[in-house]
Image (cartoon, rainbow, N blue to C red):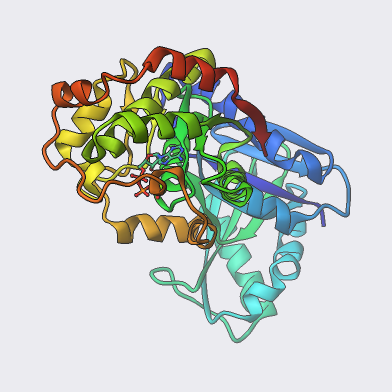
Length: 389
Ligand code: ATP
Ligand code: MG
């Protein structure tokens, strides 16, 4: 029997006039995600997208895994396609859903009749299909309140679609519909989760990573690339800028008071990140900061860091506990990579006693011996760009 993937749009069904843009972006993202699996036809009608492979050997399992990571989808399912004829439908349901129906005890049938010209009304269709299932699987009984499985028959424009259950989609908004922002990515647990969280709200991602060789190794940089490739399964391709940060850190180490090292370093990161982001046409920066997690993430420290940027800085994890962040990192499969023990530039020059109540003016005073503009220009001139898929 011919099969398709049927997709229900998520939040975007609510978007009124913007709906076309959202649907168009979602379809583009789906095509991109499924591109390497073979040719498909995609059709869109009534907040539902139909994906129909043109070959018999289509890898549906892999396609469903990929669809489950595309933002903007409320639910999806794999369906059997049948002619809109009641006899064909009654013959097909017990065969197509055999495995599921054998493994459960109770079921319920739901019918959706988008094509109002179909001769049977929904309750009649449910009764007929229910009867055919009970006849083929006598161990089953109907439970309309708490069924083990819901069998759905949808009568639509071109065909009838049959399925058992449906899978919850990734939710959120299609990537690209909210513009683009740059994630400051370290090798830690938080920043990949922050990236995922903002991609879910429709942002396309660029990434910026600060590396301090030889204090940080090529393995640390590779770890960041691996993390981004896991995020890219959800967000689509990510352009990565690796910024050489060694000289800046050494200069800070030589010319600034130790208790300000981390804050000055973070202000330098923000200054550079903002320039890169403007150049890449990003509308915001994203970080993985969480209030109070470390000394550089207290409210005064965040204030001091933010005062060097005009661009909005999104901190989606600001109110999350570590436990909540870890749960998401496990879900998106970045946790184990994040836990690999390679050094980050943040850990290279850490002060023994970071300034506890920093202010912007104290920090400006502490960085006055740095030639900030020249250091930034040099770092930006030596950025290495790559695209992570
Ligand atoms: P993470 O788990 O993301 O590393 P963290 O708790 O270790 O977070 P910090 O090291 O203080 O926190 O970094 C806070 C944020 O600053 C990170 O979430 C990330 O957005 C950014 N950041 C830290 N180090 C780097 C780096 N080497 N390159 C780019 N961004 C960085
Ligand atoms: Mg870190």
